[in-house]
Length: 170
View 1 (cartoon, one colour):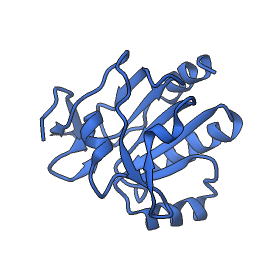
View 2 (cartoon, helix red, strand yellow):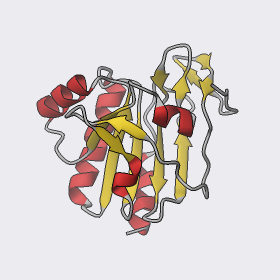
View 3 (tube, rainbow, N blue to C red):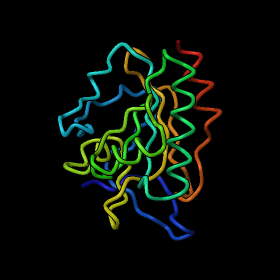
View 4 (cartoon, rainbow, N blue to C red):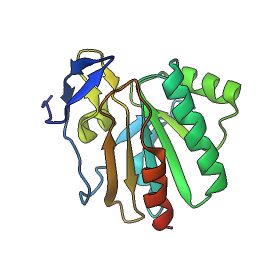
């Protein structure tokens, strides 16, 4: 897997990323992940919609839980924006977390099987086989309008910037 040029840290330590980093203006690559029902979910299933891809290492950490709750709240208030929450957590864990936390609008999908999303978007923290934290905003024509690879994985993304851009697209 190709190493990309994005520099991040995890708990202050440099963390190499692999895969193809994406940037604003790129056509968003299609990918396949696994839904909570264990069925394949393709990014192209959401064609024609404004999408926020909320990327994180694991629901079992505090910052990831906060990120998912925040984007779920925003999704419930902005029905024209689809939130895809992506991690390598198993679909069972994602379903359990969503049920326990009342996450009912954001769509959790798991990249654990093939790392198809992580590889195509450059989010794979290779030594850990986890996804780095970040946010990508994609318009209805699947053009990337905003990308944030959070420089320190243990911190939250810039919600306001991503939401401002997504809201401007609907």
